[in-house]
Image (cartoon, rainbow, N blue to C red; front, side, top):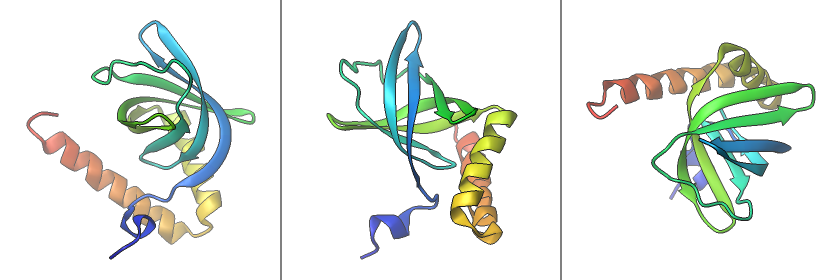
Length: 130
């Protein structure tokens, strides 16, 4: 049986960063655990009681850089929350791409992940419920 890591199409970059997850007028400060081209995982903040059907605006601070994205809640437990990126602006995408590139250390792996992301987005747009 393949390990969880082997089944992942996107490399998770472990990172200790602060972030905010906002949904309409409500915001939670979250502690990032990891990030990938597809989404992110964070610690569940106290009082986290979102509407899982509504999207989030995420803002991740990485030193002098910021990554902003619109995301959907994919899973939520007492200890962790996982978000899937729905939209990312070009500047934020470039910051995320650089972060992934530096951590992968191999442009071929980055190209493979970008290809997988493109295929995922194409499949998502082809769905009748998308």
